[in-house]
Image 1: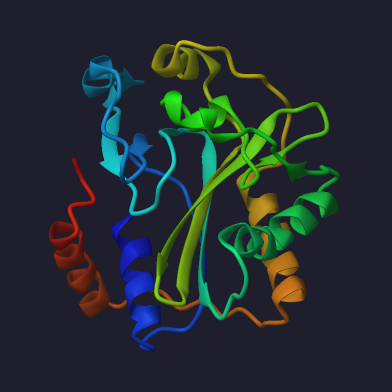
Image 2 (image 1 turned 90 degrees about the vertical axis):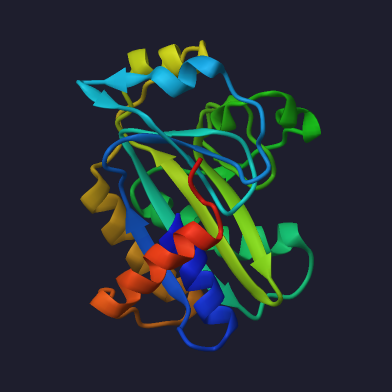
Length: 224
């Protein structure tokens, strides 16, 4: 989360180009929306396969997401015009096209503001989220804006542990076979290049950047 927030700030300052990231979580964790204050006390004592389930805070809004068996994407860019929802849809275009190439059609959710009463991000699907034809929420997304720069990131459910999900949120999760993370990353990378008219280059973070991010994490209190 600190990396995403740092990349947004660097881009806002003109020090870093637009960025597309894909990543998984190790150890697994529950990420809370930046303004999410309430969550079950039991979440502070969860474990899975002998590992503690960590609690972290996202720089973006929204509800809690269980990061186990999922793939996270992050887009940092600027130059979007129109409303917040229009920016969501402009960015989500590559997600829709990429998943279509994998044989999965996605449309936007239709839930209203009632989602704020649930701690579970995947409990409802708003207009910023993407669902399958049978109504399963596949991708939940959230945004943070700094001036004209936007961070949009989200979680894609690929191979979740249904028992752990039920333990965390007290509800069942629909199971459906999905491609591996490698196939999804390849498809979405190709779609992003086509939709945004760009050519992506891989640029690992330098040691100095890692040190800067570590300081940034403490400064913006992205952990609980």
